[in-house]
Length: 196
Image 1 (tube, helix red, strand yellow):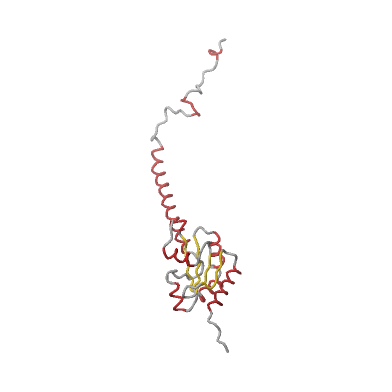
Image 2 (cartoon, rainbow, N blue to C red; image 1 turned 60 degrees about the vertical axis):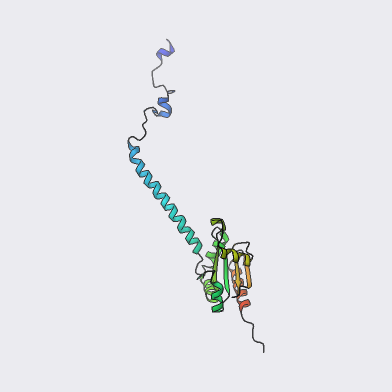
């Protein structure tokens, strides 16, 4: 018996027609359920893109404006407000990408006792660095960073109404360090006691 004659005839698995169990030569593009899926897939992808754009824009706005319970003043007007109120300025030099800055926001600026102390005793002004995100800062932010020699985030600077630095803290070292800075800033800004 000749092997080729007696072997059962079946599909030729070496044929491109049966590659991977699919008949590739008879597959039609755009036929059947694919034409119904394309508009649905298009709208799903479009909705995902729109959702992503909206969430990125919302997240950027939230990060720029975050800061817990503090009533932030525009940094451009902080010295003028300090001159009118007699309070020192508390500058918070921060950046959206800065993890310790987010801890400061949550742990210190979100603490009602600290927030009350800051809001009552200081002119709080947030200075948001946008160098990494936008490739540059506004001239006002650049000027403040140069004036106070900012080279780390977060940096807290207490200044009098003339802009003279009274106290400073770099990095976030916890609530006790923030409280010490605030107390140091209050003491330095207080008018000298009258001599007897």
